[in-house]
Image 1 (cartoon, rainbow, N blue to C red):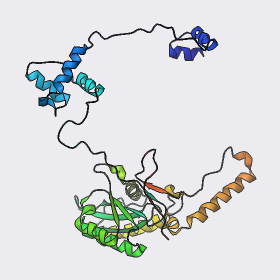
Image 2: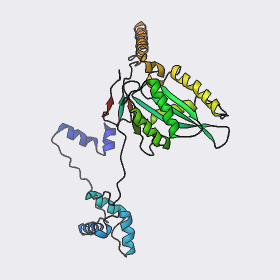
Image 3: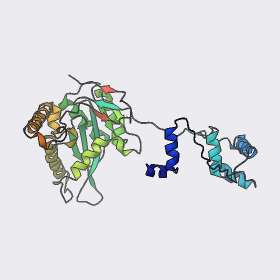
Image 4: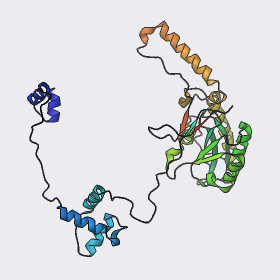
Length: 328
């Protein structure tokens, strides 16, 4: 108790007296300090009058102060002006330009496969310095499965449109079924790609400009790819060599890789819907192990319950306002 009183800067006897008498009031004399350089009411009124003049109506204090100095006047510092304007609820966007945008993409929930895709393009080193191969990679954020990919020698909206059209045929995507999320690169917003999405009935979704974590699933997949133990140490000699290696990686990733984000099942198992049985079997194994030796378990067994919802750009502390129902 003494330590608490030391933190509050009060004596232990004062605390004990307040505890015995609930009606006791704080009679300590707190020191009231008035800054010697505090502005008077007249000075504050003069500052507010000046900053609200028509000649300064679109200027922030950072510009008003030097303008007044050019006229041989000094009223207060920039910080004082900002503080007064904030107190008077006048610290707002004062110019004719639009204020900074606070737009964030509408949050989306995927509750099954073939509802929300994410895609991006990454560089693959070539043997010629300064030249690259470009990997177009499309994934389903619910199952984390790579649903389509291709390697080309340049970035192009036409290549992206052709690759995605093949994906829609393979996955039997119908109109208004899929949302395709990406960043704001030129292949993503190219006329050919947007026209293809409109023709296929696919809803485009884009990240905020300059915000890298609005497309987290594709970025995480690229890290898995380039930090794989089998990723070649030397650059690719040609585009065919790059395509062969990517073929092997995609097969491993979809069918062998136990993904930590989906309770360590493979993307193909989750995409096909057989992950539920696998997770239930694991839960039974753990329950049997706990029953056999309960002394080794001080808390519940590992959580093997399936995550039925995957969020894209969720709002913190708020439920997502748009949910895609499972298809079929």
